[in-house]
Length: 393
Image (cartoon, rainbow, N blue to C red; front, top):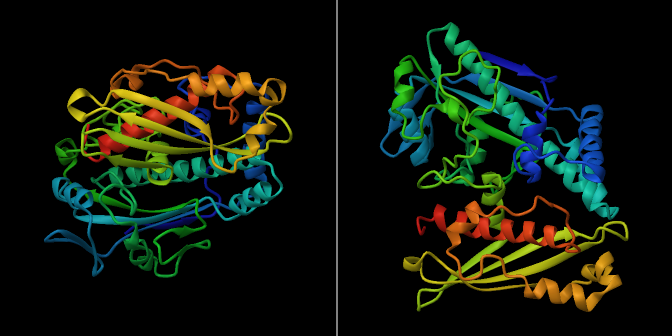
């Protein structure tokens, strides 16, 4: 049985993966302050953080009704049960990965010091490290399984589609107090440190079963490019968690988070849908003052393709940060009039946001048209993701 703990894992996140989580399109080259912040976050993390990974093969796996039982604990996830069943899993590897608490603590300090840009880049890099740790962990398990005539099934975690995050404390209890670093599951199911993840990998002796998985060969979702055991090419733009694959311009994990935390959808009796989205950003001057804008989008009926009937964007109630934007200071009426008048894709079906080629300008402010179009793209793709995930697109 395999068991290992690593307190000095590789944390050199590929630049492409870091930029993806920051929200940049593929092959985009950052420059200026954004490049400086990205390099600073990477360096700070490498010098101060204490990441770790742990994995062990479990003693038993059983599919019992709608649950998957591991070492006597029942976990209720349709996707996990389907993967273990279709993959003919004979065992499982329980694993945990953590970027450590240091980046989280320092990011909170940066926010309190009114340095939101530094906060964002460091938080994002820590999240990228967590993904990187899990990816490399999967590659390590693939090598071990191959040497034993086995294969590794796609990993799954509480909080993924169809697996209630409330089962996370129960999954953590399987650690047996052998973790090499701090990790706690709160009553809500959230982990502390937040940039941590618990995962289950199924193990099968029938490599051909990988091709029978409904979600496809696990290699298509694995970013570990130098892997010697790859059975299929990586396809980053495919969203496997949606009812059917959709190619989004924005990182699907970011869309999932924003749909849960920033978006509300209100169906109306006439078939229209009211979508409300809150965007939090920072000014490009005055030391990065926080600001908040509200988006209100009216969508037509589903049978018409959810056309964009009306779009509104403006400062959130009681927001004062927008007044510190450099363009607001220079010409407040002109800037606010531009923000109010811009309604991209007006009258067009919501699906067209997927092929809309807008500027890549993730600045937190609203000073130029490119940054405003970028934000409208985030809003509309989040709405699309939420409707698609719920089977309404």
